[in-house]
Length: 128
Image 1 (cartoon, rainbow, N blue to C red):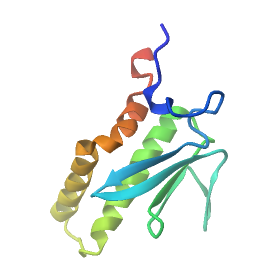
Image 2: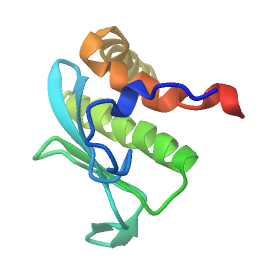
Image 3: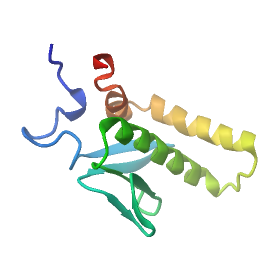
Image 4: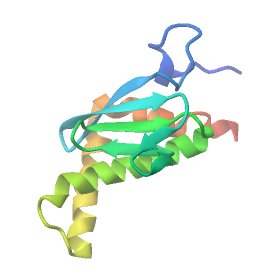
């Protein structure tokens, strides 16, 4: 049985559900753009599955990987965003770092504007 895909309900018909999509993710009350691009993500060192650009608060995810890798890459880049937000606090203690991560993820979980993120992570989970 086909299910409606709530994550991509706002995309025009025929548009790839991930490539070209731009989403907003609220991390520690800061709005980050999440871009899904067609092809690899280019960094100063070559290519990557994703990149977290702190100065523009943008996370870019490569469409050149399967859906599962896109999900784990997004989580990885969110960890960078949370870490960078707290790096100005000079965190060098494991417990402080864990607390910073805890607060960052808590704000993501609690903000209803991030519902698309959870739909993306769970998408087709029952179809495995």
